[in-house]
Length: 222
Image 1: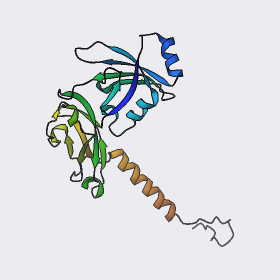
Image 2: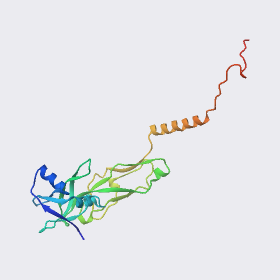
Image 3: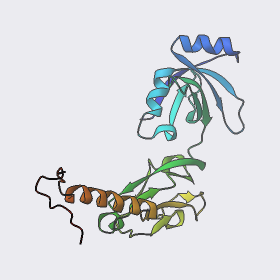
Image 4: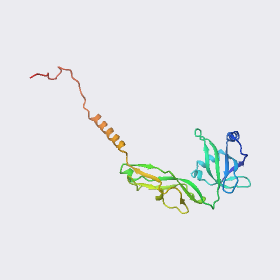
């Protein structure tokens, strides 16, 4: 069953109107899409927060209840206060379930690479999401990438991702997703120096200073 949230139409207002909407626990929004007029809305802030925090996040498909119309939509964009995390404004995009759309989905790495476990490397996660095109019902929650077989200095690119039925990859096929890198020369040198310092501290004999005349032979001139 599709998720449905309540929405109220509103007159496009200024900053004062937007502040009043937020004080009431709501968030101003705009609904737009192909071949339709933009509609200014008021949404419940909690509904939007729950959608954004769900497993599908911005790619969640849901309906907005406009009384006579219940269009299916997705969150296209949103503004958030960097200090308080308060949602300030939301852009909703009207979709058709039989028309392909472009969305961004996250990449999830799975497994421990050989290059890390036995060869002393580390994982560099370069590209964490990719853009795809597909029908709304075919949008994956994420794309899993198994990196267990990667050795030192090996990598995976977008073109190496497994093909998914009904999904076209839009991101640059040469974009680097992940690689197993070797530690830098500087890091290796620092590790060696640290080890040498520790060993030197442990091997230093205790030096006891003696005053002349206490067991030390006197110097003689030939």
